[in-house]
Length: 299
Image (cartoon, rainbow, N blue to C red; front, side, top):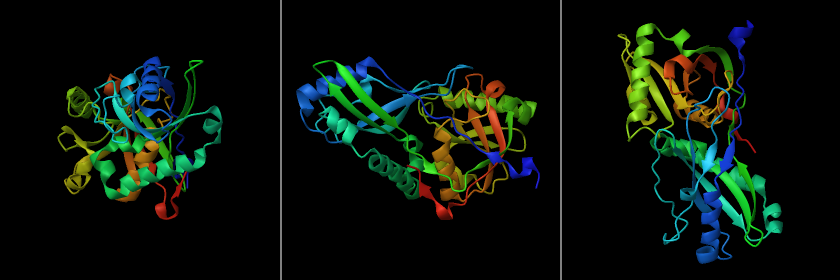
């Protein structure tokens, strides 16, 4: 088997994170006025978007609105936060400890494994098809020293281990993979998807191309409905990574869903990573999926 046929292991660029000062201000206010010494896990929301710069990847960002407001009756119930074309909301869990010793003493591996298990369960229950943002679920551990106004924190982005790993057979710019007619249709469809208030913040989707080069972008929950229609079907996602040969971290768990939920063993991915979609986006014309008979949780 040739090198191209066997493929190379698909390498994913790690997610990067940044915390806005407003997040710490709200957390401090919550701790002083509501939480006190209660260190129960808190549902939070992070935000990311497709990469918009050729040399810098986008980050997962925490803002003041990432935390529940003080008016919330129960901090354990997450508020529904809508995003926009530049802010895709992602659910996360915050463990804010009361002491620095507690911060260092938490069993991080167990917490990370628990979050990864939630992703796996969401895939198999079908929840991830209804709300694909749960595929990028994250974990944050922190200690807020309010007297010194000093914050210690640790991010983690759980991923389902692909065993054996997915392999890359080919990688080309979208402009070299689509015909001219398809490229124009894909560009128009992506702009429509990104401009609609109901889909702009939906990071995973299907790209359906019919025999007349007409393109439709659809929610992944319509996977079954797309079967048997004879259309070319690609899996698309918002890629926060700027690297030309490495997809961003969100793809890992999307592949897990594609392979384990839909039993797809070979397929094409459409990675949207710029505002000028077709010219700068990337297509993986073929990848080989793992065998999920030995699925394990990456820790």
